[in-house]
Amino acid sequence: MILSRNEIASFCDKIRANNKKIVFTNGCFDILHLGHVQYLTQAKAQGHFLFVGVNSDSSVRALKGSGRPVQTEGDRAAILDSLKSVDAVSIFSESTPLELIKVVKPTVLVKGGDWEVKNIVGGVEVESWGGKVLSLNFVEGHSTSGILKKIQNL
Image (tube, rainbow, N blue to C red; front, side, top):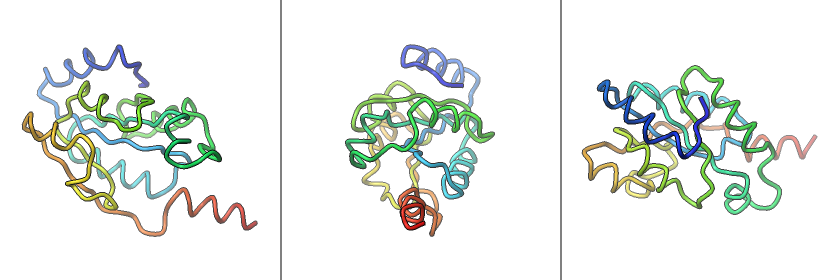
C-alpha cells in the first residue's frame, strides 16, 4: 500500500502493537532491476513488515541530475508496491529520509552493501530506540546507471 505522510504514524503503531518488526529502506528505484528485487527480498527477511521510502522526483533530480528520474515518483511507488516483499511505500521529498524514519520508527534500518553502516542516514536514531542498522549484500553488475548506459549505446 502507498501511504501519505499523515497515515504513516498510526499505521506503523498498529504494526508494532502486534509485536511485528518493521524494516525500513529507501532509495530512488528509478528503473527497477534484479539488484533491487534481491535487495528488497533480503530486507524483508530482516523482519515482518517492509516499509520503503521512495525519493520524490525533485529529490532524485537533486541527487542524480536533471535527466533523472526516468519514471515518475507515482509510477516508481506503484511498481514497488506491487512486489510481494514490499508491504508499504511512501514518497519523501527531503534530501534524506531522516524525517520519514523518525515517523516510521523501524526496528531494523537497511541499505545496500555499497553503504557503510556508520554512514546510513537515520542509523543513530534507530539505534537510540533499540533497533539495528544493517548494510545488506550488494548485487554486483546491476544498477540503474548501468542500464541507462546500455540504452544510450543502442
